[in-house]
Image 1 (cartoon, rainbow, N blue to C red):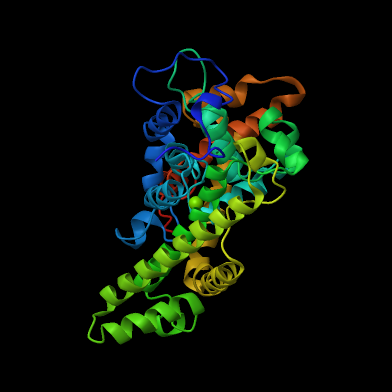
Image 2: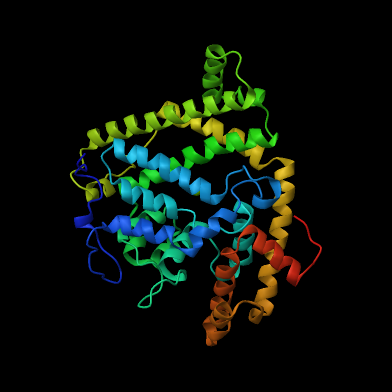
Length: 383
Ligand code: MG
């Protein structure tokens, strides 16, 4: 199927920071996806927590890697149905969480608190730093040298202060414009993926109960239907059948609503999508409300569950201690990180030391962060 006129077309790409000749048989967004998959940060996602601490709580829970793959799979379906650029959407989805710290959102909050005097820490901005600067794969330049549109999609939110430092990529946050539709879709498919897999993981963990979830609109209606059609189903299959139907309904709603909004605003190009004044990718108001209800339920019952919070708090203390130890003694870090931390002089020295430490700590996997804490602080520590 040919791409819609408002999709991201490679031939109109704003290009790469460091110009490179075209590849004989791979497209530009395909190359971006390949670079992301081959990156070190991508491989580390397998050992980073989504909600449950990866290696401690069981092998079946989602990690940042499986989450990123699920987002990519969902967004490819939606992008293809809407005649958008599937390869760009996939590349953005695979990269969207590269900047996450160990220990999930707990880690991000701890590192952000540590970095307050030096500009803070934000995982989304860190994903962009990973692909723009931190990956070292090319002799001629730092980073992965991705296309402008891929980078636009990775940076989904940004403070005014950070936007001012980011040149053409930051401008849309100052001028309140939208990104392209592929990026908008990834954002919503990220929500679809985590809402649904957190239900599955939450039930598996026993922290939330099936009968509680059956009270939540979106889950409840599919759950009742599944129980009526297949009265004798066993627990796990009943949940899988329900979640599968939910995802299909939500993605269907996203595709139909987005199609209507695109038809209503009739953009003639990706730039017209950016200028549209509101996102064109969206759920219907009814679906958005039910999705919100589900999110609220998960936040209260799962993310803030005492058992999850207890680990979260221990993880935050560990990460904070590791950060502080490296700030005092940067030479305890591997040579290339230590060199960045110690190298700068003058007024900016503190800022670049803190940023080098934050980059190093953010790149750690859950178990590497734990073993670092044991090495530096307490050899007998447990999460
Ligand atoms: Mg995500």
